Image (tube, rainbow, N blue to C red; front, side, top):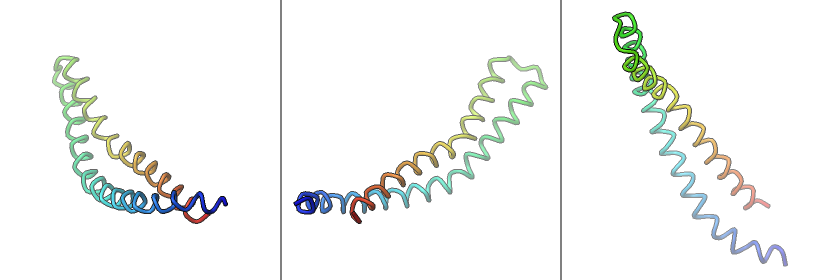
Length: 99
C-alpha cells in the first residue's frame, strides 16, 4: 500500500531531478568561469583601496572600494555554497527514488 502511494510522487520527482541536474551543471560551469573574473576584480579593487590609503584619499572612498573588493572575493564562495545546497536537495530526491 505504501509503495502504491509513493509511486505518483516518484514519477513527479523524475522531471524535477532532471531539471536540477541541468541547473547544477550550467551553474557550475558559470561559477567556474566567472570566478576568474571576480577574483581579478577583487584584486583590482583591493589594490585600489590600498593605493587610496597611501595617497590619503577620503576614508569613504577607501572603505567603499575595499567593501566592493571583499564582495567580489566572496561572491564565488557564496555561489558555491548555494550550489552545494542544490546538490543536497538533488541527492535527497535521488534517495527518495531509490527507497
